[in-house]
Length: 399
Image 1 (cartoon, rainbow, N blue to C red):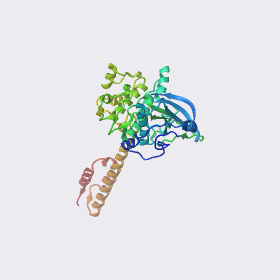
Image 2 (cartoon, rainbow, N blue to C red; image 1 turned 180 degrees about the vertical axis):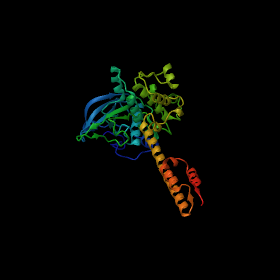
Image 3 (tube, rainbow, N blue to C red; image 1 turned 120 degrees about the horizontal axis):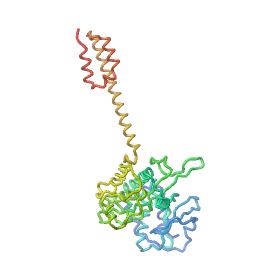
Image 4 (cartoon, rainbow, N blue to C red; image 1 turned 60 degrees about the horizontal axis):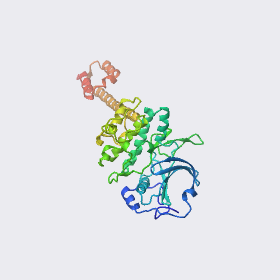
């Protein structure tokens, strides 16, 4: 069966521990593609339904696997890969998936093999297509994603980037055509069918996922293959690779701007440089001040100033509920503290009264004063303990 050497299913994926990018790629880089006269695995295992995409790498087909009846997206290179520049890009994607494992906001990978020198990659099928597909339809109707949807896209993709960056990798080609959409399906019992772990989007019917990992590289030992120049951060073009994760943040901000309706981005003119100076392209809809400022920060000329993906997943603009929860927790802590202090004050007053009575002290207007103290205790106890003790002490005189 056509395959990578030395295994006939060298890159089939099952739950696996995360691998080190450098050791994995160095171990696999010796693999070569070879031809085989055996029966095509693609034809044997899959029923092709339709072509759903064409890109730089090749074509993508919607297929049903005969064994399990599930739908997958099968990518097939459009020309022989062995010895070509495209071979490295194809291998990068396979290596990256193997290192990353499974995450709800990264398109899931299942297997890869070669047939007649053509690379074939079996991925998760996203039933909503790509973000670019939706945007092309939006242009026809002049209908764009509104701010709540834009925030959802930004937050979910940030969660995927957070995972990729935490794994020591960068994507380097974030753009609408590489963001995929999954609409959750309802099962027979009316429950949502999803293999995603609980990531805080249980109530959302749309999941956004990062795909096309052909430009992925290591943060610590980068071998950069530049992505789409329209979304490329200036420091990457200048081969300054110290802050590669922030290049993904830059591209994500421009992706959101395009989704908001800013139109096609420039590739190399004055406006291209204007954007790299920290200026958002014109967006034909009003955005809240906080959201607009966040997008501007994400394209700041200084990559150090841009927020990390981890910071974005907790940002108050994107997750105001986290801020409210933190505020409620602080209020709860204050109330607990007040309750504890009130209990201390009550104990202090009780001990003072008992001490005075046991020692035979005369409390000026004892009954009436104590009644007043007890009645107005909540107000009195707003004072520090020392002041309350001093107030009570002033009322006590030795007979």
